[in-house]
Length: 547
Ligand SMILES: [Ca+2]
Ligand SMILES: [Ca+2]
Ligand SMILES: [Ca+2]
Ligand SMILES: [Ca+2]
Ligand SMILES: [Zn+2]
Image 1 (cartoon, rainbow, N blue to C red):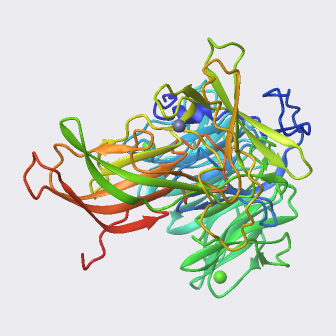
Image 2 (image 1 turned 180 degrees about the horizontal axis):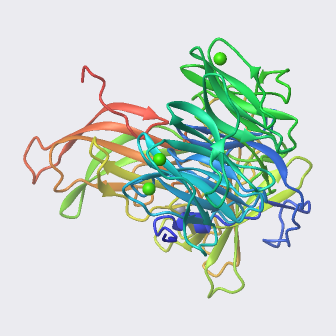
Image 3 (image 1 turned 30 degrees about the vertical axis):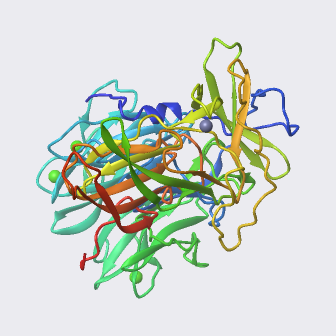
């Protein structure tokens, strides 16, 4: 087993975080960070996985917010009983492996390194020190156990040709329930955490998958497939089974709330939606309408740093499709310029306060998140401001607020922007009109501390309903074309690319344009760039079949 902090996951380590509540503050505060006071208690929340990533919400579906350090394709989420850590599986390093995220710092640890097999479905021990999980290849998995601190090695719990899947550690710690096809079809089994005493849990009708222990330890809810119908069933350890929830479509993947009074499950035909019901199966209701469908749904007790909050007014950057593409000569070659516009369509401002102790130190940025009632939460370590010496700027820039790339249609990068800097202000104009969005009074009308290279405090940001619009060539905002073969390319613009700034959602941060590059008068004369399509909300603005 290897433990790796991913190099390319540097962003993760930097998403530090105390979204802790601090005192109400005056509008023009003269200090940058008041001492945050932690909210001590964790809150019950739901984590929803869809094809764009992971979001959290309150159990009633309100206050949905994206989790910055999880990516599309991450799944099998399991929140530690202690609330501080999240285990999951991901193929972000090329093969599906287990990871643990620290929910306070966002720091990731990879727990497995088995390129020849998938490592999936982690389940916590009740004390939060160990995981059991399933590892193997299609049709043949086995269960294993490890200590999350890396001591003690890996202990196999099952072996043989059966497909052993979806382990769930019992609340008293004594046994692990799982699904296995050892007797032909999938049934519920148990094994001790030492790998002994493998035995059927109960005799179930039909097939059984995905068991989840009730916190009392006296029953498991599971997906039962009987006569082709997938429904949520309950098996008690005294040997009885009964159907808890049924509908004509799929009902399955039950997950008990931490207090055992309700469970979440997935329901639907084709596209699945998040539902919950009371413990006995009554009161079934859809939690929220998930526009992209739901892949997975789990309960967890989350600390205030990551728990959703109805009071937090987070921003939501929305990158408009690239516009105003224009080619010009640059030294001996040619570059492509374009306009970039990033709207804030969220519930609160992008609000950045930077500070330092002396002019010799770096200007470190903290994100401030406004809460209803005037309180503010702080998120330190979200970036660095740099004083820009070149006219007409001569003020403080945030690097890497939007990233620009030219890619081939199969996604290979062929050109990146030079380091683009940004001064976020409300002066660049209104965001595009969106129903229900009420633009705020503009509050960021300064000029990023112009001609103050020795400044100790700089505030910048974007109010709700405003945009950060940068025209072609504005901040070195162009991409080199010289030497690129004629053909079709994607111009991709990504706001907040490292996800250092906390937002409501990240799926709308990317936009792209499909362009055709040609060299009508040869490689030593100006090329031509023609826009074929423009797409907001997608980095893959691919040709329509007719193109
Ligand atoms: Ca693996
Ligand atoms: Ca096996
Ligand atoms: Ca059903
Ligand atoms: Ca966004
Ligand atoms: Zn500037």
